[in-house]
Amino acid sequence: MSTLGSFIWSIADQLRGPYRPNQYGTVILPFTILRRLDSILEPDRARVRELAAKHENPNRLRVEVKRATGRPFYNTSNYSFANLLADADGLADNLTDYVDRFSADVDVFEYFDFKKEILGLEKAGLLREIVKSFSAIDLHPDKVSNSDMGDAFEYIIRKFNEAANETSGDHYTPRDAIRLLMDLLFAEKDMDLTAEGIVRTLYDPTAGTGGMLSLAEEHLLAQNPDAKLTLYGQEYNPQSYAICKSDLLAKGHDATNIAFGNTLTDDAFNNRFFDFSMSNPPYGVDWKQYAKAITKERDEAGPYGRFAPGLPATSDGQMLFLLHLAHKMRAPEDGGGRVGIVMNGSPLFNGGAGSGPSNIRQWLLENDLVEAIVALPTNMFFNTGIATYIWILDNSKHPDRNGKVQLIDGTSFWTKMRKSLGSKNREISESDRAQIVRLYADFTDADPDHSKVLTNDEFGYWTITVERPLLDDVGNPVVDRKGKPKPDSKKRDTENVPFTYGRSTAGPATQAEVIQAYFDTEVKPHVPGAWIDWAKTKTGYEIPFTRHFYKYVSPRPLAEIDADLEKQVAKILDLLREVEG
Image (cartoon, rainbow, N blue to C red; front, side):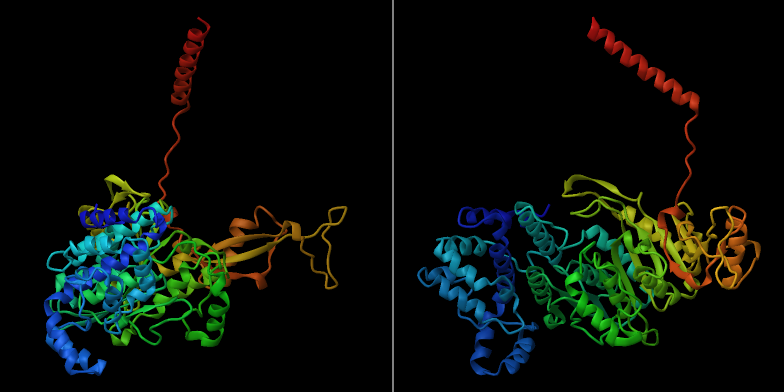
């Protein structure tokens, strides 16, 4: 639990009455951000005011402030938490002036409609107490690390959403899941990342409160403190966007690289490509309202557009983010790009041959972009206990991994939490994480109970249509004008033929030969008069993850089952005798 978050949450108790629990966030979150920025600006406030008096041009002032303080943002107001309470009658006006006089890149308070909240607090007689409570906290990074501040924000959001009976998992991903994703994302590039003077770009199209970007930066700087990292993100939830942007401002990043908006309909970084990208998109979220814009982009962008390979069902947009990230990888000739994305199980197998999801998998696998997929333990996330998977994409794989996909079953690597957080009652400890990363590193030598390495074409199949003749009343086939038997649509069936069928016996190689061999062996002996309608053959791809790790457990012996039943029957009879007695 975040101690700081708990303390800030206690401030919200003062809002009870005039504010409902689901309104607390619109007050406490912007005040927390304001106090954090205020603490950072305090040591140089006088110097910035001097510079503001000299330079009226905001662009020139920004340059001078950066030179003097090392920060890209500033505030030119005469007010701060240090003196706001001195003028009781002018508190609302002075606080509004303070918020208004931030540099243009600090637009975060607009997304909370904060000035309206200031007036509301004053009207309710609560403004002075809230300002006083926040004045008592020092949120300078020397006192509260970026990691602790992130934990506090996550704690506050979770508490607010629990109070409002809303979903909490939309905003952030558990730190233990992110750390595993980072270890896997950067695993193949660790040697490169320690090189002197490296410059790398990191991108999250569903940035939330910035947790993934922050931990990615932390991971890379731990390996190479001199690395120059540029963080990019886009977020469509106003409050999450404000937290993410203010967090990066506090760390001295260029906050213009954090954009507000819907990544799927308005890519803020169009024609920009990245070294590392990461995302935990929402699961099972309907994108019907954006379908027109997305379909239009797909049609107009041509074969190289981000949605060209296919579109998933409008009931679930996860695979749109998967395609988007695959499109955002830096080109192989420029050093290549890697992607880490967390999704539920449906992108592995939903949609039959010829469907949008199957076509997306086909494009990813035939272009050799999927490097590894890791099954996470269940009950890992705050708002869902369902099975989740980390996909790692790479467009410049290590030669050993070319043409292959590694499946890792990490479902058994977890530690029980002492206290549940929503649906989350399991976490991936450092030891658990190390074991999963070791499986990844060992690749073809990894424990086969937890890791399988398959070729890309092992996920492909053809769906063939098998027809049987329509029979007349006396059982003879009905034929058309050319004398060919007519198919009986009621008996029509389909079969999925693996690309690799017959390969182990050095069998046929062409598509037609593989399908014919399958039909002759698996179908014809059971339905002698059947035939293949070749015109209806479709290509499909699926990743049946659990099937590859299925272990047959033989049923218990009948004698053992009978003995157990007899014991239970005896117990029931004893209970009935007691009742009768």
